[in-house]
Image: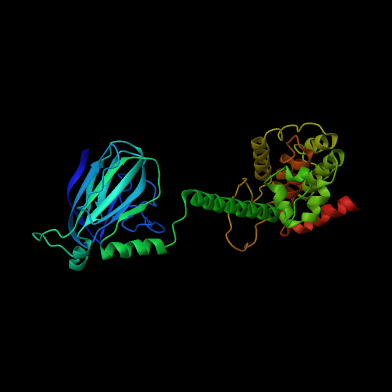
Amino acid sequence: MTVLFDGDVHVHYGFIWLATADDPLPEGDSRAGQSNGLCGAAIPGALNMVTGLHTGSVPLRVEALAAAPPLDDAWEDVVEVPLFAPDREYMLSAFEEFHEVTLPQVGSLRARWSAQGMDAAREADNRLDGEPALDAYLLQLWPAPPAPDVVLRQTARSAAYWHEVARNSPPPPSPEHVARQAAEQQRQLEVERQARDEQDLLDSWGGSLPNPRVLALGYGRPRELAQQDRLLLDLVGALEEPALRQLTAWICRTSCRRAGLEDADWVAPTLAALERGAPLPPPFDNSASAWDRLSAHWAAGDDEASEVTYEVSYEIGEAAGRTPLAPEAAALDAVLSTDTDDPLRAAIDALVGAGCSFDDPQDWYDEVRRHLTG
């Protein structure tokens, strides 16, 4: 036999915990649903032991044994419970006071809680310094397979009361039930998240998903067009590659004509190349060079717009309107948007880019629709 602790423990509210050092004061009702109400073992790896004294110091001895000891007639109330110790380092605790206890081993143990003087201590309620102890306790631990808790001896009225409370209280959910409940909650959260994501995706495409070719384009101008004119997006998305290339060339030429750039010597070869399906010639083979050339064009024409300004804005709440781009800037945007291997993306990006010069892009979208359906 090894004595693990022998001394006074200052209790509050008439209980003592034996629990792991990393969680010395577990939460939860550890006695509900048991046969006994003096030593709770429903919380895995911990014991909650009841004392007769409400507040004050109680003598407590903790022993480790190799096997179950015989019952000692000196103890009036005796109960046993199972304990699975995940660690050797434990704490005896009662709110303000903590005592380290090192168990002889981990694993399955049997715990016997023995008490004497519970009724006298319950009637006194408190024990002040210098007053004699009215109750005393013994906790004995030994290796044993798991077995239900049991009342071995009952004498005190207060012990009978706590036994009745435990038996009439619903037992806490098992760890397996808690795990299943947590898994179900996680599953439900995942279902709700997926539903939100699916609805957000539908909303971003104007209420329904487009055809797979358009859907594969992802974020950007395809979704912008879906929000502004979903029917036009569907119309463009249904075109085959030759028709898409023709539409893209028409968009770029129309946009440049509106901006007064169609016949400019640095623009005309590019429009012709688009109509032939050829690579973009300088300066449109490099976006920075193209914007620099537009700045030079504006400067040479003594135009008020002498440089290109990029603006990124974020709006919260209802949109407050938009500032149209200069027609020349929108035309360059449309032409540069064609620098992609995907003819569908080129057509949609050019279409939306060209519309940036309109006070109401819907006017431009209607013009494109008439071109496609006329």
